[in-house]
Amino acid sequence: MRPSPTRRTVLTATAAGAAALGAAPGPAEAATPGHRPPATAQPPSRELRTLLRELDSARIEATVSKLVSFGTRHTLSAQDNPDRGIGAARDWLLAELRSCAATSGGRMTAELQSYVQEPASRIPTPTRITNVLATLRGSVTPERVYVVSGHYDSRVTDVMNATADAPGADDDASGVAVVLELARVMATRRPASTIIFAAVAGEEQGLYGSTYLAQQLKAAGTDVQGMFTNDIVGSSTADDGTKDPYTIRLFAEGVPTSETPEQAAVRRSVGGENDSPSRQLARFVRDVADNDATGMHVRVVHRRDRYLRGGDHIPFLERAYPAARFTEPAEDFAHQHQDVRVDESGKQYGDLPEFCDFDFVERVARVNAAALWTLAQAPGTPRGAKIVTSALTNSTRLVWTRGTEPDLAGYEIVWRETTAPEWTHVIPAGDVTAYEVDLSKDNVFFGVRAVNRAGLRSPVAFPSPQS
Image (cartoon, rainbow, N blue to C red; front, side, top):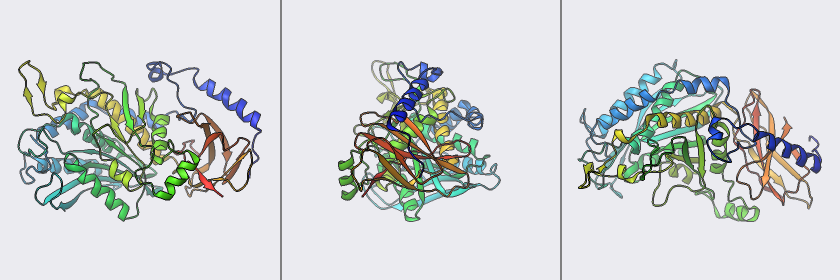
């Protein structure tokens, strides 16, 4: 086991490093008063910057316009009309993803994932629910999987109205456009791990498509180490007209939805309410996607979702997969879940493309791309991370299981004060599976992250106690 630096050395060196990190903020940081990248931030590589430059707001706009052109995409709308309804949208999306797959050299496949939903909440008769998926197989660790989704169904004021025009430009053609643009750009590349690009159905009726997708992945034992849903990411303008075009919200739960009574007892004993896998995933997004390459500030919100709302990340959380939701910074509810109409004052209602900001959506796609690509190229989140509690001591010993990635270079220990929202200190540990830090485990939080030879870091693993 590598010897630890002394407590005084750790505190002095890491405090100096943290101060240096805030010395020269870039354009995205400068736009937010007091904004400072976390100590764990990863600068974008040349490869990533090239990928981000290929994302195109014009293609995103064309996707949104095409989806709107189907009139309605309500889950209960026509499935066999070639021009109108959810079936027409489904077939067009499959054709687009197959076109992406054709550029991949056989690495990407596109398919329909269907099942018949029996009568249930907001589903009055047996209804076929179909997800449209593209899978880009990893070239090194294909068994490790990341998922990005948007939902292609739409609705108006009456959630059961399957015939009225329901353009759904922002909710959620915008999210589907992000997914499709990511698939187009990444299809020609070779990620180390597997990425699934998903346009799911049945969200407005009750998260039916994403539930089926998560259920199928869980049943197959798939190692999903991160999932993002993009839902309502099309506009930077709030209901009062104010704009925030350089911020995207990322909702990430604290106490895990899937937590067992035994896990809850451990959490209560160690104070891990802010250290769920989803919170570590959100911190990772800040690390790699809140910078000048995306031009965006990622505002992490410590909630599973907004009040009275829910999204397609929830079925993944229910199955113990780390997941989070991207949503625009401030919503205009006149352009969500509304009949298309003009009221007596002349105000336009309805989720129409004219209320979208496609340059903003492109930047949201950049945030997604930075997170997904880095996740897929970096090592996986460390497994078996434990903090040894078998003896009373004022130092801290951490242990973990070494990963199997062929380019794994080693590990880093991260820590922060218990009141700090983000990791503030990083200690190189080397290619070891145990490390001792001369700081009390009673006073701070610790984590472990992996590093590969290219210098890419994994999300942090929060250790559980080992007696």
